[in-house]
Length: 144
Figure 1 (cartoon, rainbow, N blue to C red):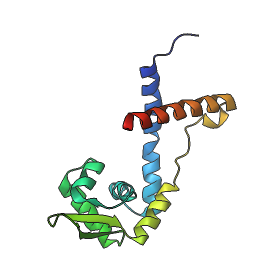
Figure 2 (figure 1 turned 90 degrees about the vertical axis):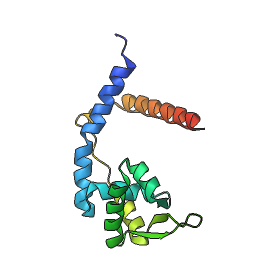
Figure 3 (figure 1 turned 135 degrees about the vertical axis):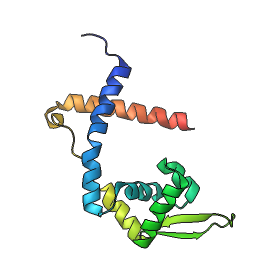
Figure 4 (figure 1 turned 90 degrees about the horizontal axis):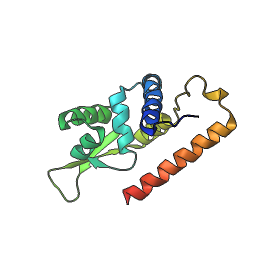
């Protein structure tokens, strides 16, 4: 057995996952009736209120784009704006009860695995699980 280049393997794994994201985005948009940009905003707010600037940064968009998304989500009753408790120049954006229900709906959407996944032997799935656990543990240590 030849040595696998870990970077090449990562590139291939990443491509496999990213290629399936279009189907996931389409599925979420169908279920929610929201453009995926709005879904991204809602998912960023699931951990708590954010300022417009923080939301824009989390979404990796500019502030005007985040404002347009928030305006739409507020109009749909999924988010609300409130005065920031310590910065009068800022507003905090948070989920409404309906927004939290929408996030739960979004989180329940699990894209199907790629073709061939179901045919993998259980020991291969177990090995992949161990790899993911190891990577997740290393990320936690690195985040400290």
